[in-house]
Length: 425
Image 1 (tube, rainbow, N blue to C red):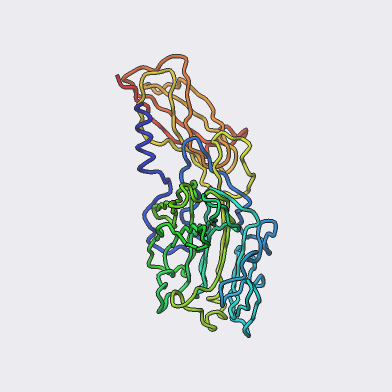
Image 2 (tube, rainbow, N blue to C red):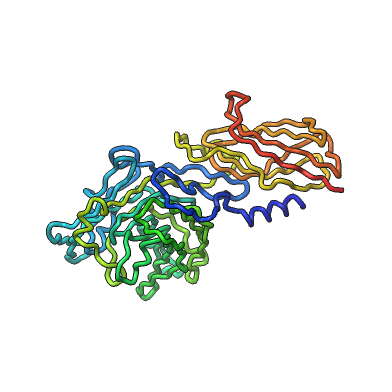
């Protein structure tokens, strides 16, 4: 049908409502860049997932959601994960690295391991599967990592029953300064990976990776705050979002399993050491410099997809995640003569709202008025307007949409949008 063709073309070319040109100026702590999930699939709505969302506005870590350590990993030598290096204050989750006064030997994994750098890790207590995840963070100005990633804790049985696999999804990994080492490029831009950790039936271990997704940038990750986002769409694909950039996409390694990323994973926020010669170990001077040694996570947010009209999926939140709006997916659409009109539209609402729809004829006379319930979140839906009689062919009608408070001041309009509908001969 004509209206559907027009909609599909629009979705393909502008599927990300937030896609803009890269910012010309650095991102200041007071200035947010692109945030929030991308346009949802037709018939779906993004809602906040509170189990993996935190604004870090308190004075201590929310232990109902997070571990202040990694429950199954003590750190990559010489960096030891230490709960003492995790703090919350001034609106941030802070991970502060330090040079240990003396070598610390920890007996783990059947051997003695020597550590001399204090790092940090925060891990979700729940696992999750599919959804959009993003964080706003400023890296430490050292060679300690600043990361935002997910992984499974257990080995899952592979397709041959005698094999096993685990999953790791790295939305972003970085360091905060450059240097004379091969991984110096990790100090700028965004770097995303997906690992299919596979143990075959002979016990041999493999790291099967999807092609890395990279966003280049001239600025160091420690110069200012950046927003890193990842959409785990399904078992086979993911998409990545960096500030205001157009998204990039990734297909997971699928030579062992057709749908490899089929298991839930835990969220990880980690500051660790990387091995030389890839990344050099941070110096004692930078580790003990308060102006350089701290990663600042401003917030982390997670969203899940629900049916657009699911009234039970709303998590009550005081956050103003959206500049509330309603939008048609095109300025003009065409449709065959009928007494029903299919209208694709999107909206963003911080609370449950109402969308008032009014249809006008060519003489600007109102011929229909109806109200659509708009549940909190970011929705993409098709709404059917039913008329008592067919609309006239070779005529253009006007449809207005006003998003308004629910049950409140009927005159107050949060946003409005207009669509013209043609009925050609």
